[in-house]
Image (cartoon, rainbow, N blue to C red; front, side, top):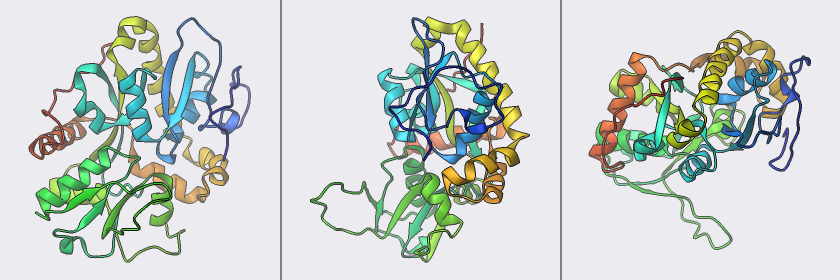
Length: 312
């Protein structure tokens, strides 16, 4: 795997041809300022193109990048350990008063997403009253499966997180949530122990609502805006540029990342092309529906208004 949490590098990479001149799992130093903007970086394939493009275009130097799984980034953002990140949509629903949203940026899927799965021993229609293992790495997906099972299938399931450590009970659930690169490999059939029933949560949501699903939003802490509004406005413009650049260079990026991710380049290209990085009106409608259902189930206190960052 390229890079560790303890590594730090400085300098730019605009003159190199490699997408991996700054591995997307890597901590970053750069040109230090008194207060550097700290950006959370999802250590999954779904966000790799945006971060790779930032580095390839020489736009990453003023910032510090801190990698983690979605749930880790949610915690760090809420605690003020990072200033902004592509975080679980659910995190915004929990703490909307703390945040602004970056307009027209997300990690979404119009149909299948392939990397957020329900893996079940039984058909989903037969999960009534059964135990579902949630993912410790994801908040949006955990809420989504509860919405789907309770609102679409009226399943009355029980939910818990997997136990950790040497004293695990060994209890096995009937179904579990899997996300990220491991889920993508299962979906692609790389894991030969693939179970009998694999459901794509984005596709289930589309079938239920007729809408795409927004897994992650680019979220900014409000106090970071008060401190660094002009710099954040510049960063937002850099993110828009990086998105456009990434979407036109998927094939080149896939060739660079296939070894690190252990996913064939052609599968990476198809996967990235299935993801949407914008936040259009249909996705905003979906997001509001998701929050409304989450409120109905008591998963968040109240379905929040969407408050967007307005640049300097």
